Length: 183
Image 1 (cartoon, rainbow, N blue to C red):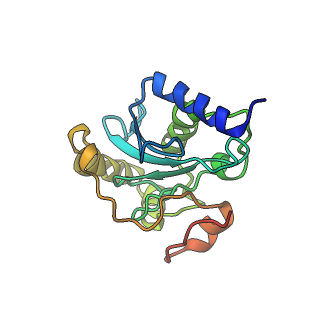
Image 2: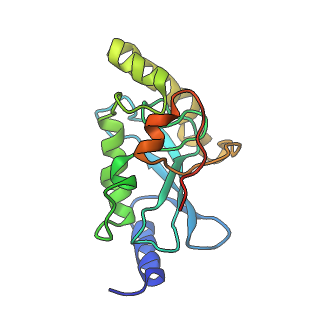
């Protein structure tokens, strides 16, 4: 296999040639935004999110950091920071995966099949378990308020971390915010 920098370039180019809008940060290939549409047949359908991606120096041997920039109501996404608690990204990442997999498989699966038993957003998890129609209505309200296509470029940048959290950090988070995972 080629060097990590060549693989990073190849994966980013593959993502850019797909149907996703990609915005590079500082003209580098390690940090960028991807515009992501909510999956069909889900309460997230119609929403558009700006997702920040950061590739570590050791990519593809280490997973990318993923964070929602505009707000999303989901049990496994921290509402304030946008941090994603996504086991496949954190624990089972393999160099066989690429950036297109993240946006075509992992994130859609996260939105289609939330895990309320391992929440970063305890309120969303509790509502989902207690009253699924009310949860889905709240998701749709957030989509309308924070994830309209015309609003995606104006999403706030005030969070302190947009890295995803490890499974242990997800469990220990409870009501307090956690910092980024150690390298």
